[in-house]
Image 1: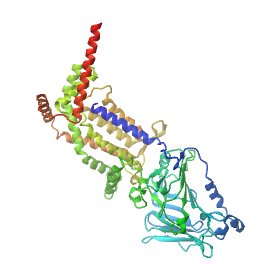
Image 2 (image 1 turned 60 degrees about the vertical axis):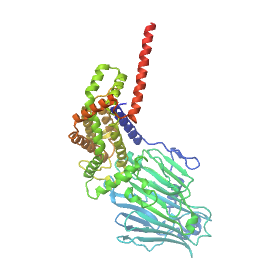
Image 3 (image 1 turned 90 degrees about the vertical axis):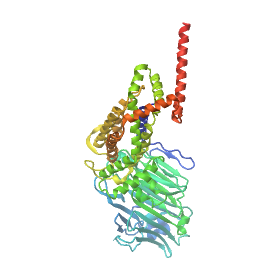
Image 4 (image 1 turned 30 degrees about the horizontal axis):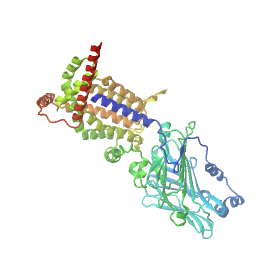
Length: 617
């Protein structure tokens, strides 16, 4: 197999990987005892319906019947308390002692509106306590607090919501809001209620009708999901895509998140895992106002709460790799960095380098250019080796053409004679492929990283208003395989890829084979144009700049490569091998020698068989 064929196969593999990323992945198989997944349509849950009913005002008799011992705190007047720091604005309500609304102050929606992560219209919660007279939703009780509206600057603030059921008996919910950041500490306390409580754990139900924060609704739906970490630190999630998903876990979990493309709402257990969990994501294709409906139904160990260990965290903020590492174990895995083989490249190289450069370069388009140049400088030794390999092939081009004229259209014979030539002069046809192959993980890693890199969100460059999504330079009615827009950065990437293919084909001799790889080198960029047309402008701009820098880099390297010296070295190798003084082939060369010998024996046997068949006639 020659160099161009290998490169062609690698391009095909790249296309297949891109296709797999665009098509929703099948649900991973789980052990039946631990998890089941289905894509059957679901209706609104009974818990959500119960929440809606409970919002109706109650008279004293109805409160006594519904809440039993908690009837004294089942009615009251709701009051909002707004606490904010430089990053987040949180609205609490005394009805339920809960978070009512969260606004992220440093972010906007795609249409430049305030980014409200949750509010009463989109997010509903239930905190169900088992009692001797039935289950009571603590989020429907009325709490007292001395807290007032505040804007934090230097110190965190604690808010205590207290519902006194009877003298010496109360429920307390305590929130600690940081002076900066997105993590709210949350403590749940049950004081003097042991005789009121029944057996069973506390149920925490959360339904979030996920809003659209990015411009591409379908892309938002494919990215939206629920992530969670088991007690054994196995990171899992509901299958991303545009269909309904459900999972029921019998194993404990440490935390879960309702994940938008670039934002998270999460709940974390601090002192012990959550024993059971049920998660759903529901999609209504006809509803263009809701990306997905995410439903989390988990249990909180009542024994921990009774013992004063009911300590948890809420996270309301960006899905930013740099911020998530300190929130909880493995919490930064909410940012998808690619398959396990590619993740280290992004985690330990591209993300740190990108953020380091971001400290000095405010314009993200210029930052991408600097990143390309930096990566290309690191890969210069591989690029040089690849170019030298191509130079050797150019030096051998006249002899290869002579072989073609001598053997005619017999492709097998051409391959055999070329392999003999490579062996004589000590050239490995794969030596130029190894550097190319070594750069493929970098291209794939970026392919995974850029669609999840919040640093590019709403950062403009040239005509692109947002480098985290496609640049719709031209819009038109939807066309199959193209969509409703044309990305100019993708067009430039395609043009530069074709230009590089043309330059490369001019300096590389044509290899024999049933497929014209030079022609395919022009076809593949056009195919990738349709695949990448809806990918982030930052990614296609990176590929465009990378192609331009590669061409310039090879033009520079060409000035330092003397093909006459290369020819002299190859001729010297030929003489040494002919006299038996050359070093013995090893590795690939030895394998190649054995394959050539086997092929030659097979050819001779075939010719002998044909000769005998003719003699019999």
